[in-house]
Image 1: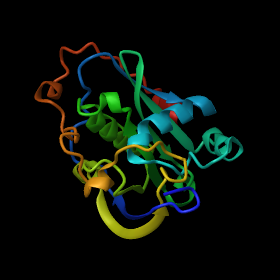
Image 2: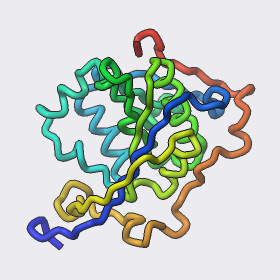
Image 3: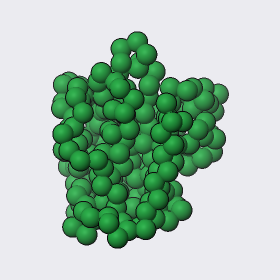
Image 4: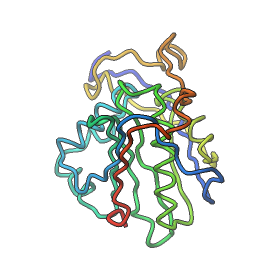
Amino acid sequence: MSKSNPRKLDVVVSFLEMQTPPDRPAAIIPPGKVAIVRAETPTLSFYRYLYNTVGEPWMWWERRMMTDEDLAPILEAPETHVYVLYVAGVPAGFAELDLSKHAQSGEIDLHYMGLIPDFIGKGYGKYLLNWAVDTAWSLKPSRLTVNTCTLDHPSALGAYQKAGFVVYDQRTDIVDDPRDVGLIPPIDHPIDHGGHLDGDAPSSESDPENADNADSDTLVVDFPERAR
């Protein structure tokens, strides 16, 4: 296929919500030197590094399409909260909360959440997701929302449901394959294999040794007052 004649992908989008805080302990920190820091007005280059590196395996393309002039105001808006997960000083993933509806409807959207591929399957995803949910609820919303689609990691929908989200709507979009239009490199993707890559699906659960962080050398930096 070519840019002038790209393949068409049927993408099922699931919309999820959480109307009350989850009934569970606070997010368990994996062992090691772990930090979560809010990137206040992240630079375009740093944000694109996070977005592109986290999203490339799952063909995140929407913000690759945006010009710097269109993306910059979103990142500069006080309603955009970008939190970066670091492991031993290295960026490992990020979570982005959208508070643009918070003042009027009380809603907060978990707009993006994911890990850099090197850190998948080590317990950081569950921690980052639970931490993002806990942080969002600390801002006193009436409702949290998130959406995922069949281009995302095959375990993404289940992970959101385990975190306490419930599906309230679905739709099917027909999109141009981002690889054919040049937004994503020609990667191998689960959608090419009926949703699965043999031997390449990391565990959606933490390893047992991650369940107790009592002996870990952990630093959590989340600047909760600044987040507000």
